[in-house]
Length: 288
Image 1 (cartoon, rainbow, N blue to C red):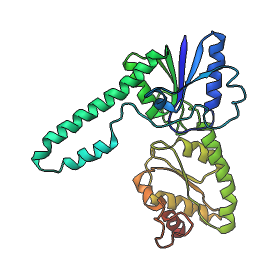
Image 2 (image 1 turned 45 degrees about the vertical axis):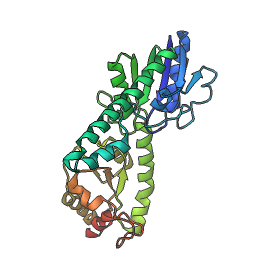
Image 3 (image 1 turned 30 degrees about the horizontal axis):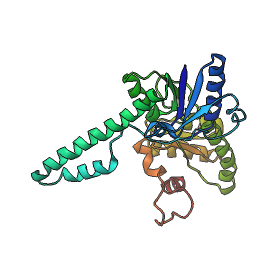
Image 4 (image 1 turned 60 degrees about the vertical axis):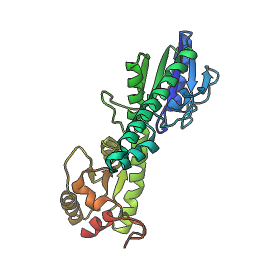
């Protein structure tokens, strides 16, 4: 059996360890492993493949990033420049309809050409199955190729930890640890300056990083998209802490609910009071 392995989307700690584990396990079954470079882009055009052996993956366990490279290439994605043109043509006079139809036909052929390139390269290079390491975007592409008959195994990789049916994704533990370390350092700064510090964590549409990192780092208030919250709730809690003689360190995830967004979103560079600090989060602190 010949297995293709690719990594897509953002890089994170643990990818090389996973690649190494795949190669070492495959060797026990005498399976051949081929690395696909730079995500799905490695299966477009002439294909960019790299033989992987137990010798070639020796020593990569502690390395960050991914030895295969990565990209956000999506073979099913339409040409973005043509989509921009189509959007503008929607507001044009009725005479633009023939051009719109031509561009839509081009987009369909564009996607079909890239999709077929991937399928042809899988067949040409004798890949019996793919192991895909990625998050929502990368694995959504894998799922579509699975529907086209390609045997695929998905390894969940995203620091956001937001993949359904998955308890723990590659990269999540490192993200939580980094956040915890940052909060540990900021506690002393908040105390020294008698300030409230707002910390923003990544996580896209979910609050797992903020929740677990905030708990581990001792955040005083954690705002996540899953739990309704307002700036009044945050201020009320921190005012109570302030009255008791303690300083607050609220934790917020990117894309928090709109009720809290107003005070926790940074101000634009050059706006009044935007030199350092955390923008409107600063104003929330001053309200205390």
